[in-house]
Amino acid sequence: MEGSFQDKEKEKIRKPLKILIVESNQEIADLVKDILENEDHQVTAFTSKERALEELKRKKEENSPFDWVITNRGFGERLQSKMDGITFAETIRKEKLGNPYITMLSRSAEAYSQKNLKEMGIQHTIGKPFEKGQLLELVSVVRQFRTQPENPQIA
Image (cartoon, rainbow, N blue to C red):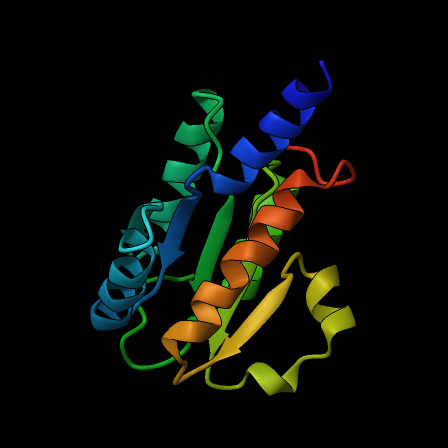
């Protein structure tokens, strides 16, 4: 019996993550998607936060929520959405669309304190431009977040 609990924990750690990318710049979205798919994760990408919210709702109904949401801040000339990344993260929490680890990609990531970000529902920021290694390092952080009892999936 002892081994079965440990085996289940190891399986959780190795299991591919379900990741949602929401990035208004299609090139960046494709780059992030390629990096994470090459690590065998299940990745879905949108350039519109509204369409991404529809997908989050659909996944909630299927009881198959995302583990990790990577969103951009959402300001700029290429804006495909009426919603910024902060409002998007707050909407996920407010509408209880799962309990994903949320990372925000932003050119101005340093402008926010960690306390303010957590209050907005964002666990981490990555400044643009970013390195591939920064994303890959976060995979283990997200997996750890998913296994914490105080961070259960919200059905």
